[in-house]
Length: 295
Ligand code: NDP
Image 1 (cartoon, rainbow, N blue to C red):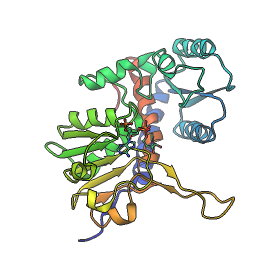
Image 2 (cartoon, protein in one colour; image 1 turned 90 degrees about the vertical axis):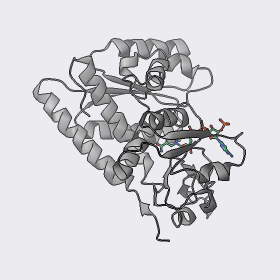
Image 3 (spheres, rainbow, N blue to C red; image 1 turned 60 degrees about the horizontal axis):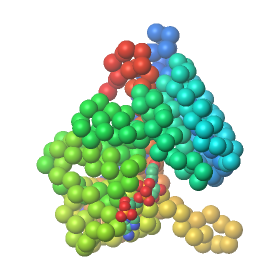
Image 4 (cartoon, rainbow, N blue to C red; image 1 turned 135 degrees about the horizontal axis):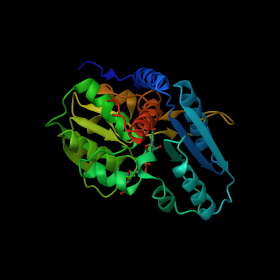
């Protein structure tokens, strides 16, 4: 058995960002500059890094970036008032409230207060409902990125058996909806699934989105399957004071001997998430101004 093709998400994401930048340049000629507002509440270190990267890449593709940093004690009403202001601001085409939010804030209430047309994370119930019913939706960025990588490698996904490991609202469920929309036969597995290895072995496409370091072993994977690893897990540092290694939910070294193709961590799904956020912001800006969104 030859080792799997390693899917280069970093290169794919760079191409997608370049395409978005071209389209943003076209819109500039028509006097439109898409704008993305990112709201960060508190000082979660991982969120700080994500927000910084999002702002940098937003500017790099020629969009406007609006950053709103609120302190950890912010009241829900104040956050809702900011969301309302951004909903009304015509320079803002996309709004992203970075999760997780502090405990005093009901995240669902805040997400559902965002204008669905500006909900570039695709987490609003209206967008979730549109996706589930096959209508035009803003689609959550991470699963959208996974679908792009799959279609790039496999072309038409019709009839393939897909297993999605994880059923969160932000990854697992929308991933399953997208695969169903692409005519896969989809199984969603989770912590109560019986005989997980046997369920996973049925998959032509296996998506791992559980948040458990290296959980998916080589004998869970059907020979030749395409494995997409969404997980981001930091291992304990090997030396005191050092930084732990980042690994996915898949045992990469072992599974790459069984799979047909596999995404690495880092450098697989991760870079696709921000690239899809920019693509969603472009889509939102086009729709808001009566233009057809680019494909
Ligand atoms: P959640 O914790 O919200 O969901 C995890 C899911 O995995 C749940 O459905 C849970 O089942 C299931 N699960 C947990 N343990 C097991 C187990 N032992 N066996 C089977 N199923 C299990 O995580 P997210 O969906 O938010 O994220 C998943 C991973 O993806 C994380 O590592 C996260 O860091 C990463 N991620 C990466 C992104 C990227 O840009 N690459 C973006 C978003 C997330 P149950 O519902 O039964 O509890």
